[in-house]
Image (cartoon, rainbow, N blue to C red; front, side, top):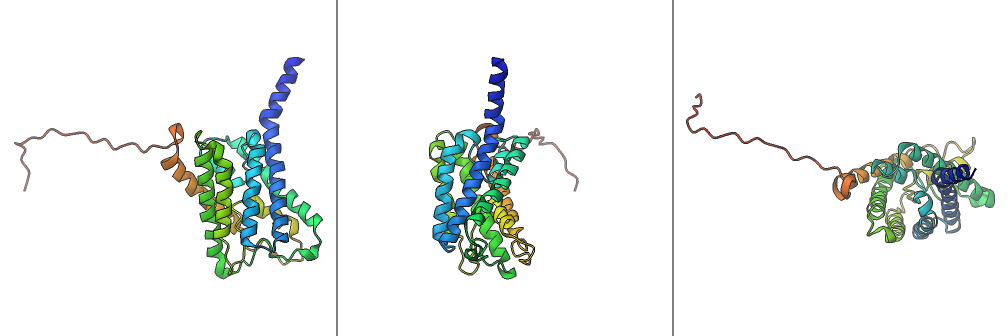
Length: 261
């Protein structure tokens, strides 16, 4: 009986609790960022600070339970770095996506529809700023994922990793904000997907979905580049992919060899 109880506890702590931590953390992250964006009238500086500081305390609170990812592209980065198994990464992915939807739905239920301007988080994604928006997602995500992998997978830097991750989000959010685009840099597909689901209606003309792919393609590209840089350049030990040196066999020199003209 005691052995069964110990087994159940170990399964909960190793399998269930990490998924719950990612789910609850994603709810908290999305609800705080969404509410902050409404209350600060989409200020790039304020939103970036709120986003970054929220990630700091979430990583400190839940990091020892699940790793403190709360972001599908960070989950992908850890999977490519051979830290997470594919089944675990899939569970984290759905926990983060569903958590983002729940968090955004809580914000919508807490604020009157009149206070939701429609562009508080997404900005104005016109055709002529799509490339700018894509780069505004890809480059900051590259920086974020690279920061996460380098600081969390190095024992000497791990203690400061929550601060490094939080400050990287703040810096990237503030510097990538554009008055022409007036859009928030997510660096997190769950953080963009949740509000799109919670706030879209059959009568909005597809406002939230028309260019929604930008918030997936940009972060995915940035994550793939960051993961390659980490595995080939910055990784330590067995995680680093080393390119084998070419081996040339030395041929004996024959001075009497004749060459045809």
